[in-house]
Image (cartoon, rainbow, N blue to C red; front, side, top):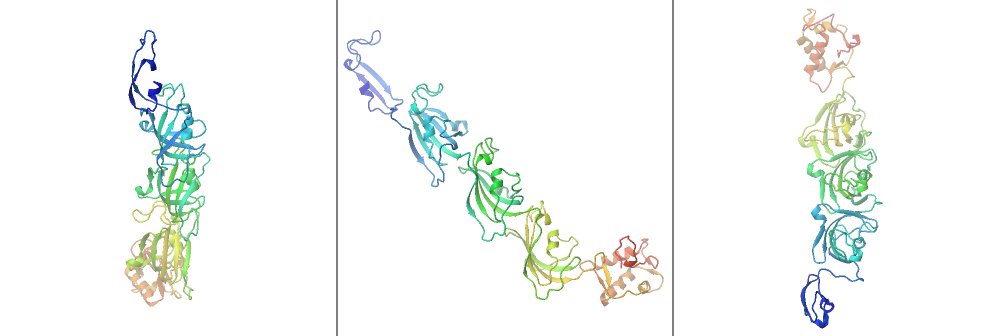
Amino acid sequence: MDKALVGMCVNERRFVKIPPKLGYGSEGVSGVIPPNSVLHFDVLLIDLWNSEDEVQIQTYFKPEKCPRTIQVSDFVRYHYNGTFLDGTLFDSSHNRMRTYDTYVGIGWLIPGMDKGLLGMCVGEKRIITVPPFLAYGEEGDGKEIPGQASLVFDVALLDLHNPKDGITIENQQVPKSCERKSQIGDFLRYHYNGTLLDGTLFDSSYSRNHTYDTYIGKGYVIAGMDEGLLGVCIGEKRRIIIPPHLGYGEEGRGKIPGSAVLVFDIHVIDFHNPLDSVNITTHYKPSNCTVLSKKGDYLKYHYNASLLDGTLLDSTVSLGKTYNIVLGLGQVVLGMDMGLRDMCVGERRTVVIPPHLGYGEAGVEGEVPGSAVLVFDIELLELVSGLPDGYMFVWHGDVSPNLFEEIDKDNNGEVFLEEFSEYIQAQVDSGKGKLAPGFDSEKIVKNMFTNQDRNGDGKITAEEFKLKDQETTEGHDEL
């Protein structure tokens, strides 16, 4: 038999015929093998090893990029099929649908696996053959693995990190212009793809067609992302690799398994700070710039409105008509009201408006995203000076001491709306008076009439009629 087994392969089957002189000879084995017996053996070789054997490693797939390999004390997640040398399966992480997660090189594994995993890349696949004295030895594991069994592991490495790892930032694409970088307390809007180290996608803001919006440095996101989003520019793209102790830890979350390294490819759309005010950059100002816009002025201007990433939202230029407002009366968002002040006709400026001075967290459905920073390129085309605060009509000269009599043309002691309207319009047409610009003149005059008609009977008497400076603290907007 010693001679017959030499040269056999695992899983080879031989029929061996042994003459008595190479078997048990003329004596045989009492009660079992008669003397001078020819012996016949049907042999199937299951396993073989040598005391001088080492762990055997056969890599059959290795990624082109291998930035890091397994080192002693790394924590790894891998799938495996465990077989004997004859191919019999004794264990499989695939069947359990769960990776095997462990430290390498510190005695948590059998010695042969500790050695066989070293130097692997994420995504690499290799066959690790372990002799029994580097596996479960003479005793086996008392379950599926018999004593003196060689073990074969078909391993696919999915993940690795070291407990001492911090975040890693790669593949930065930074815009040429970066006036400001994100800081603790800023509010960011960004898109991302989130994958595991093996490339498995677990989440994507793009698939939801909505940015992820959050404060940074305040614990609103996982610690690794909080750190990785600091120091970014608007428009920057970067890859943030986060070890599990700075991600979702040993427990994982949802589609993210426990102890998983996370890879986020992010694109920063915009950011602002809740303490930010409107930022104004003047590109052109006429040399003769003495009349500046103020509250109550009637303005006509062109604008292009966009997001910080350059996405165009609206443009009066493309529509071929100006945007017209009375400044300071809430006809535009507060940031625009602030951005249009102290401008002169012909001036061009860019106004950057943080969301709390724009359209806030809600935005405008289908038009302006929530929490978006807005950029307005503005050119002021026309300015009509407004009236003092609280006035809808003013006189350019001295007021006639017989004002009521002048309005009451038929001298019957009563002024009706038609008489009142004709008189006020005549003063405006002659340049003696001025109505507040930017409003419906008929509505202004009617409002003035109603305020004078104190008893609401549809006419004004001399007793009811008062000028603004004759009013008490009742607060009427009068003549």
